[in-house]
Amino acid sequence: MIRCISPVDGRVYAERAVATEAAITTAIAQARGAQAVWRRVPVAERARYCLAAVDAMLAMQDEIVPELAWQMGRPIRYGAGELRGFAERAHYMIGIAEAALAPIDPGPKEGFQRWIARDPLGLVLVIAPWNYPYLTAVNSVVPALMAGNAVILKHAAQTILVGERFQRAFDAAGLPAGLFQTLVLDHDQTAKLIAGRQVDQVNFTGSVAGGRAMEAAASGSFIGLGLELGGKDPAYVRADADLANAVENLVDGAFFNSGQSCCGIERIYVHQDLYSKFVDGFVETTKAYALGDPLDAATTLGPMVKAEAAAFVRGQVREAVAAGARALVAPELFARDAEGTPYMAPQVLVDVTHAMAVMREESFGPVVGIMPVASDAEAVRLMNDSPYGLTASLWTADADAAAALGAQIETGTVFMNRCDYLDPALAWTGVKDTGRGASLSRVGYETLTRPKSYHFRVG
Image 1 (cartoon, rainbow, N blue to C red):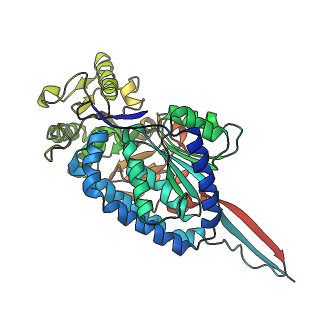
Image 2 (spheres, rainbow, N blue to C red):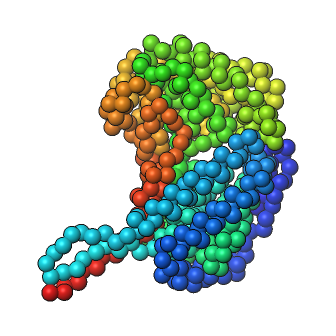
Image 3 (cartoon, rainbow, N blue to C red):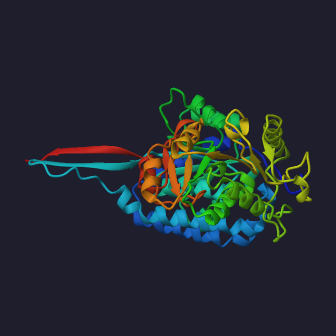
């Protein structure tokens, strides 16, 4: 059985039996059969099905929002925001599909006709995480279908019901049977599916350890892998930054979703001229959070996904303090904070160094370290001192300076005066241990298709 233990109260919220081997074999066969027909369906017709599925998903919003809170702890006041993002990404990728999938014309050559077609890969396995279960899944599911592929979705145990919501939405849209399927799989079954070359592409979002497991399973199979893994995303506040704007947005970037975001802000470097004022404002803004039951509309900070996850972050904080850091937020200010539970108060650390795990290893929780820097060069050096590279944000009034600094930062996305956001028109990608491949934008369609060249002598 796959069980979802709710962080709200520790009870089993949902459980599902893993698929039998016979069910997996049948699902693969159905997907292959459906895809053989679907690949010949015009892109405009594929779009009608996918748009109808988006509408069907949005129609379930009133059920989805509290369901999300029970499964992974996000306050209900924010649940609809994920569905808005889901719709934005889906609509964008549907809207650009015709152009993105059109044949590439290399230009005229006398006596020849030449073009490069974008052929679907076949069957795409999407392995989605719990922290943004609709947003991360839609990044691959909708464009994979639009590109002419079949899709199997394996969702995280913590958000097992999200997979069922996707299935209901596509079924309601009348998508051909077998083309999209949700399977409940354990780790061994997933690895076997990949190692046996039963799928043609795996798009995985999760931990670095999970990404290594994907690579191990796919070793020698030559199937494609898209890996969006961990992050330790930095921010740099320059001396010319709008202080109030930087404080407000970086607090949100650090603590939204209880810090459980791959592109959340986990470390901040502030020019020494602004450092004291920035820290004071950051701490005061942090203290305004309301930690509590995510089903309460007044709650702005819910529990972490598991007690073990909160214990890990608390451990990072204790280690940092023991090594000389100062914790500026008293947990007692948050009545619901309690050791041994998923309910953890947000924490701000200063006097931190890169010798501390909290400044180098992914926290994935409501803690952030803040360091003063004397120059742009020092900020860039510290921002690059990480095994990860998903996003980095620069806070400045000088766009030219931001562009020059961005060219030096080892990251997949550079933000200026914003953070923790995904624009579907831009490629979502990372460097170093953050993974490989890209989703969304026109580039995302390249990873879900293969080029096929046509070279005809006609003269």
